[in-house]
Image (tube, rainbow, N blue to C red):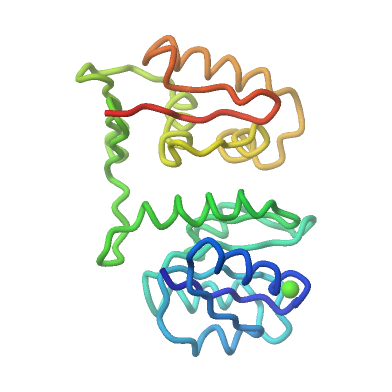
Length: 219
Ligand code: CA
């Protein structure tokens, strides 16, 4: 897998390039937006929004206009970042600096898993063990039986199951499923997890104590 890292700050890019290479990725580095736009085709782009020459959002848009390469946007904390706008620009996911390296690798793998070998996103269906989710009709079945979920239960399940095996932190789940600016109680998250366990099976969502949750189910 070839990644293009677009990042002008060497204190971030140097350890990141080393780490990603250790994870088995081939990594190209571009330090400007112009270099990013003229780079050879890759399997995924990690795009810092704060670039010296071009507006990161413009780079994102132009990359997306030129190809269907998956794009993960990296933003600085405090950026006026609107998830909806990013998705409209064509980004597949985003991480906020400072981010953990493990979290970033999990995001990269999750985005790559959602993309089929011909580069077209295959987001209409998710199969994990006994679970099948039709993302278009929002129909869920578990062990062959249809399961009725509320909209938030559905969103939470999709978020967990689309990165099955990986731990998603409570903060990430609150931000992505409820509201990116959520700073309040996460009790509502626990309530929804409990409800999913009741409707699916008690053992499919594992609690990782004081971190978050993980979807686990083998065929
Ligand atoms: Ca930067």
